[in-house]
Length: 144
Image (cartoon, rainbow, N blue to C red):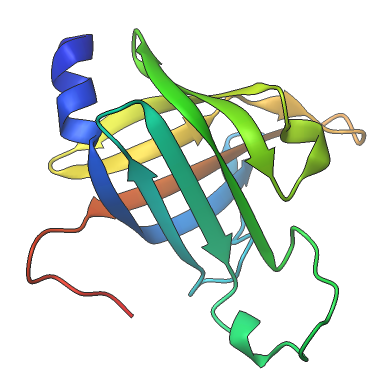
């Protein structure tokens, strides 16, 4: 698939089906729980926004302080570079992401989209990677 075809296919709103992390190439954990929730939107004007949260996030006390283990969000411009979608972050709940480019490898699984982070070595010397599987929302399809 060409970059133009990938870009056209990306535009729209996506629902998180699954998010898991891998440690040294093997399943490691569900960062927001097995039932984590998320939405990812790509506009045709080159803007994107993503939001991820634990399914039980609504049970947090009012005005509570939260951290990225419970919910996270970011937005910015997006573009395709080969097999990657690049998110140029200008707004984020994780301060160190602001002003950076988050690169996600795109793997099409039928109509679903698997986004993979680049593997990163943690302080413990192990290699970690996140994999997020998304389903495109279509008219008449509503998710909780």
